[in-house]
Image (tube, rainbow, N blue to C red; front, side, top):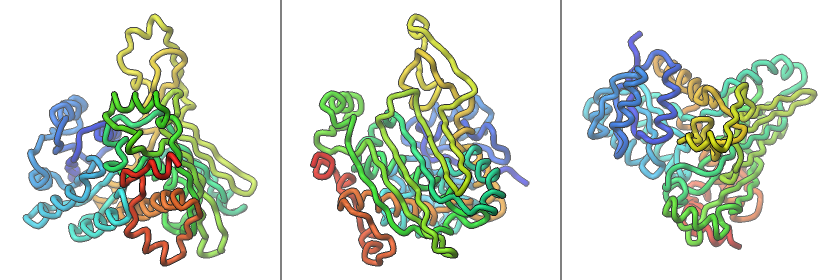
Length: 414
């Protein structure tokens, strides 16, 4: 079967990370890229690694005419305009076999609904990229425990955390552009993997029904005067005026529609984890069994002393979001594979070749957006949000959090 021709929209950090993942993926060529900035560097990166010609295109229509799978790795505020341009390209003859969108699908439920509608009009299969569900450690844990689940019952409590010291780009810190703070940025990961882990073996990813969300959002590190000044100087974002949360925690309750059992997914996320770097911490607890995943447990450790550290240019050669280049470092030899980026690409491309949606499609991405926004609503209202209430669902359809409106001081400084 002929290789799929991938076209990337965006050439920033996450696009580079996905390109690293493609080094371990067969059946696709990185054929093109369109980006407002960074295209030349990204093209060279792709060519140096034999990923494809990665032709630079001057607009989205040209990219769509020369590629048959489009991956959207551009900033959140541009998503709707990008997909509208993809639809325009399809209307004039572009033949697409798949659409990929990096998390989150939308900054609000309304945005995510719009993107789902546009994708249906385009008519191509979709993949919502949520890498943690595809982590080999998570999938192997579920596989290993499948016979135990059959005998003892499914997992009843899933706990997930993603934490690091903060994003790379200024727009991520700006709640009016990104759509919030750490809950929007990383809570989507933790909520999704919790839902997945709790799902009984053999059932579809949306089998469990979301019942309620309780959440809390806080500004802890980046709300202090010293850290606010650092953020202003480095990123140009003023958290004394338009703050976003740097810590969130909460619980999503799900109901098993066949048994009525309520199961729980706890999530914790922060931009204030000043340790080795990005940490993914997950566990699942069932009757008489459990599993745990910790991404900082690596088979490789490196020690760099003070004198030697002067020659180290980039702390992130050891680990994504690393904040130190000396001392005892946890080093992951293949982060793109560890975090699930390789497997989510394999899943999407395999599905597209068969003319099907990936395991996680854009409709699923819409539901994750809904749960994240319910988290913001819960934090604002200081109460549990009942997702079975039609009035709450109607509120969520038009809801934009105060933090995303740039009014975070009203809830974070209260």
